[in-house]
Image 1 (cartoon, one colour):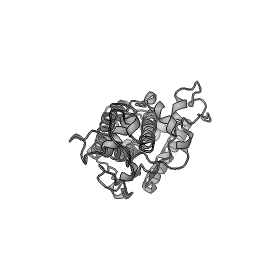
Image 2 (image 1 turned 135 degrees about the vertical axis):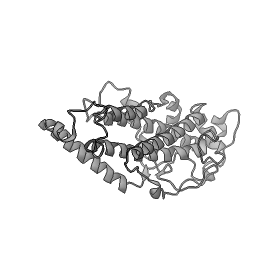
Image 3 (image 1 turned 90 degrees about the horizontal axis):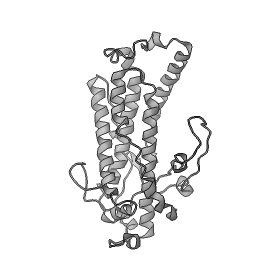
Image 4 (image 1 turned 135 degrees about the horizontal axis):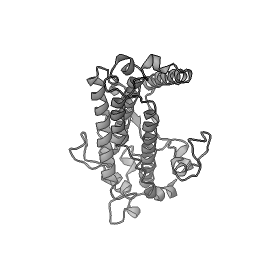
Length: 291
């Protein structure tokens, strides 16, 4: 996925440096002397400056940025294929042909997109409010939203943080979660791509212009009236949905292992619980024949 990453790389680099130093200090048995892990569960200790200005702050800022990126891509999906109501701001009537195409995968896909979009917007807002309530500066990615978006019917035409029209999708999650091999014990384990072609080149998961929906029509059997081209676009989105959610479902528990205080842990788990692994794997079987 193409996105503006210069600021994000700096944040990742800073976080990785602190994680590395923290791990080293733990091995040396000195961690408690510097960051207070000898007092990790005491209710009043989390917001001590030496806690909140180091690793917890960087993790929260990283996640604040990440949720804005996810909100950005789900908003694009929702504009074109989600339920068009006032629960999610910025909708512009949707794209009925694209919505029909993704509904071939699952009859409630429009609801799924709508609800995920609402979730990601709320996650970003929660983390922003939480950081600011503790006197920390939240991350604002809006200046980096410079990528031109879709101009198809239903799109608001806004510039974006992410580009859903040039995706390379890792579909190895399909085999990873069906394999007896455990990547936790074998980091070098190889997992086959479910759709090898999606992991090569760049593919669009949304109609770029109305030319991508041309020739399609709504009918009682959209598998026949929606062109194979538009179905392939929609099914690319289906695999991308699963790729997004399995990534988030893995990241949060991984970062949770760095948490040492109850207050931070509780706030963190509030988002972990909101990120079940909604793969819809069974629904994406139909997509394979188009790639």
